[in-house]
Structure formats: structure tokens, C-alpha cells
Image 1 (tube, rainbow, N blue to C red):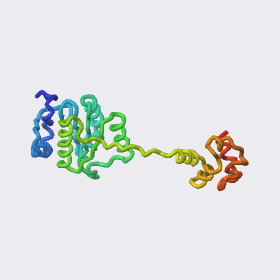
Image 2 (image 1 turned 135 degrees about the horizontal axis):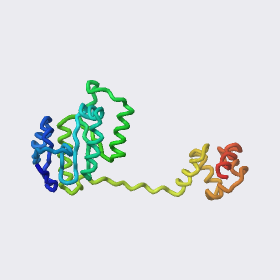
Image 3 (image 1 turned 120 degrees about the vertical axis):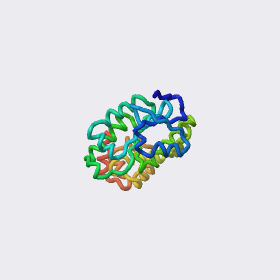
Image 4 (image 1 turned 60 degrees about the horizontal axis):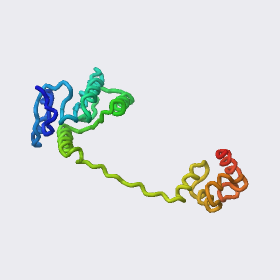
Length: 215
């Protein structure tokens, strides 16, 4: 069956997903779910979103037989917004894979292939994620507007203190003393060792180290 990707209100689910409760759960949420033979991925939402769903057991198995890497590549090539859902909790009965290897796979999928990964606890949670994606898509991708916070403006004196505190041996108290003794950072940077050493909390040894860095 041909998938009409322009139909944003329809979820096209691969027939193999009928082994799970997810298609029925989506129908219970009043979504139009069509079962098809889809060789690309498990769920297609409109023209842009493709979702590959894996139980944790299948995730481990697909690593062992190397299916995962091909599936992720196909997902990335066919959708603007691909998503890999890993469902369920780790269990030793599914087999053990080295933690470093798992981390490497997560990084490869998310950073190299640029396919986000979401973990869900069960089929109900997976259905809810897909449901939210459909709502998001039908609101022109504006349902979850990111909240932007403006950075608080940093006072000029605070900026100067931060520059000074980047030097080894200069903390908050010493940076305040320096700003009391010198009119500007430039005056401090151009001063002699003897002048720096006179600042409370510095001394000659620290003053010499500071001058070495500045020179």
C-alpha cells in the first residue's frame, strides 16, 4: 500500500507493530491509524516525521546483528525529523553489552546520524509520545514553544573581577583589592612586580607569577 505522506492526520504504522498494543492505544486516543507494509520505519507521521520503535530486547538484538545502524541511516535519509524510541528497561535476560559500547552507540546515533533517542517505560508511554508528536505536527510545530530567558546583564566591575579571578591565586577578595588599588585593568597589567606585590593578599611571589603570565 502506498503511504500518502501529505495526510498529516493519519498515522501509518507498519503491520509488524500489531504485535504490540501501540496501534490500538493510538486508536483509543482517537487517532487515525492505518496499518501498511512499511519497509522504511515503524510509524510515519505526515511527510516529515518517522519513528522507529524498539523494545529494549530488540534494541540489544539489533546491535548484535547490526540492523540498528542500517535502520538509523534509512530513518535519517527519509525524514526531516527522525526519532528512535527505545521502550522498556534494561534487563540482563536480553543480553549484556559493555556500557562503553552502549554509550558509543548512543553518541553515534544522536551526534553522527543526528537521530534523537527517547526512552519510554512501556507501550502506553510510547503511544503518548506519538500522540503528542501528531498534535505538535498539526499545530505547525508550534505546540512546544521554547521558553527563552535573557541573560542578566553583568556589571562592568563584575566583568573585571571575573577576568582577574581567571589568574591562578587570585580569588574574590584579592580581585576586589586589585580594583581598589588600580584605576583600571590596564593599569594593573602594566604595573611592576613591586606595585602588584603591595596589594593585600598577593605578595611578591604571586606578583612574579602574575607578571610571567602577562609577559
